[in-house]
Amino acid sequence: MIHLRPLDDSGVERLLGLAVADTDPADVMPPGWTVDRPDEFRDFYRDLQPDAYEIVDGDRTVGMARLTAHGDIGMWLVRCARGRGTGPATLHRLKDEAARRGITTLVAHTTTDNHAALAALRKAGAALHTDGPRATARLAVEPARDPDDAVT
Image 1 (tube, one colour):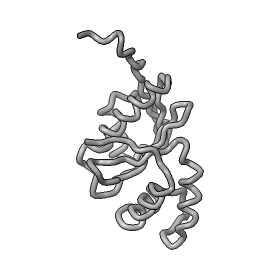
Image 2 (cartoon, rainbow, N blue to C red; image 1 turned 180 degrees about the horizontal axis):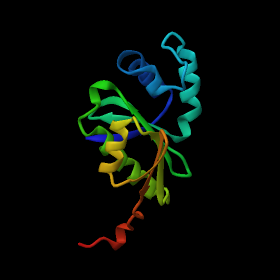
Image 3 (cartoon, rainbow, N blue to C red; image 1 turned 45 degrees about the vertical axis):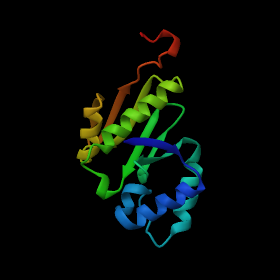
């Protein structure tokens, strides 16, 4: 089962280990980063901590997701977690968190050649718009239900 764990300093170290062992550096950092510069990775992800989560499958970290106060989202997964439903499951967890925070729309920016991301976004019900090589996805978030309104 996929869940999100708020990113802390220990999580940054777990993500760094994953980034070095089982990803393409371009998937996890801005262009130009290489695995021989771990302090850049640490600084980058520490700056993201208020908006970032570890993606956890069972008890194992398999990637990172972010959700800003404005509803911007992003994620990356280790290679061994791809193609197993982790992306769509993470999007559902991000929708749950957005609903709790009162965010009504999630927005993801990617490229038209990022087929895995586009497939996960479509599967989660996102509306896609392309402009040349860029793609923007919008995903409506259902408001959080008040537990007192639940049907019993």
